[in-house]
Length: 359
Ligand code: DOR
Ligand code: ZN
Image (cartoon, rainbow, N blue to C red):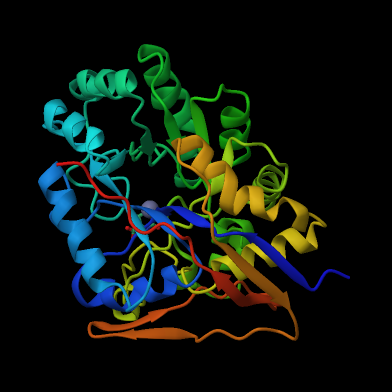
C-alpha cells in the first residue's frame, strides 16, 4: 500500500484571497501547500488596472508569513472600459498572468463585469495576439435560465461564439461543474483549459439541500447532480492536460454565509490537497495526482513546474480546524463529508523566489 507520496509543489490556478484582515488570515492556509496561485480580482472595488494589480500584489506579499515562498500571479478584472494598452503593458511586465471575465451579476462582486460582449472584443483580440489567457466564470445571468443549466447555456451562447470570433484566444473555463463543461473543454485544442475545484470533486447538490440547507456548501457555479460530479472526477483523474486544479477557495465570514441570503463560496485552502488526494485514491488514481495539481496548470500558463516538492503521508483520519479566525469573524473550512487520510508531511521549497517584475 502506498503511504507516502512525493509530488512537485502544487499551484492553485484560481484563488480568492480578499484583502485586509481576511487576506492576512487565509494566506497562510494557501502557502502551506501551494507555491503559486492565480489571484482573483473581484475585490471591492475590483482590480482593473495594472496599477491596481501591482498594489494588490504588494499587499499580498506584505501579508505573507515569515519565510514563506509564494508567488501571487495577478489577474485583471475585465470591464467594458478596460484599457487594452494598460493590460498589455501589465502582461508584458510579467505582472498580470490572466484576465478574468465575470458576466455582470453572475456571482460575488461581479457588478462591474461584462454585459455587452461586443464592447470587450477589441481587448480579447489584443489578448489573443499576446497569448494572455482569459479566465471565464462560465454562467449566463439570464434569470429565465435555471441555475443548474447556466453553465451549459454559457458554453453554447457565449463561450463558443466568443472563441470562434477570436481565434487564438487562450481561455480557461473556471470551476467546471457539468459534464457539458468537461465535454466541451476536452474536445478543444491546446488553447482551451479548464479548472476543477476540490469541493466540486467532493459534493453534489444533495449535500447542499437534502436534510436541511447547508450554506457552507453553497458556491457558484452551484454543485450539480452526482452524474456531473462523476464527470469531473473522470476528467481530473484522466491525465488529460486540459484539466488542472483551481480551488476557487472563497472565504466569507460565517456571519455572511449563515443568513437569509448567504454569500456564495467554499473555503477550501486549508484542506483542498487532502480532499483531492482522498478522491483520487478512492478512484485508484493517485498516480494522476501530480499531473492534476502540479503539472498541467503551469504547462497551460507557459510557466515551468515548481522545482520544490511536497510530501504527503497517509495515516489515521486527519483533522483540520472547523474554522479559522480572522479579525472580521470566523471562516468555516470546507467539510468534504468523508474522512481524509492524506496530509502534508514535508516540503522542500523552490530554490527560486518570487519573479522579479520588469520596470
Ligand atoms: O462561489 C463563489 N465564490 N463563486 C464565485 O464565482 C465567486 C466566489 C467569491 O468571490 O466568493
Ligand atoms: Zn472564483
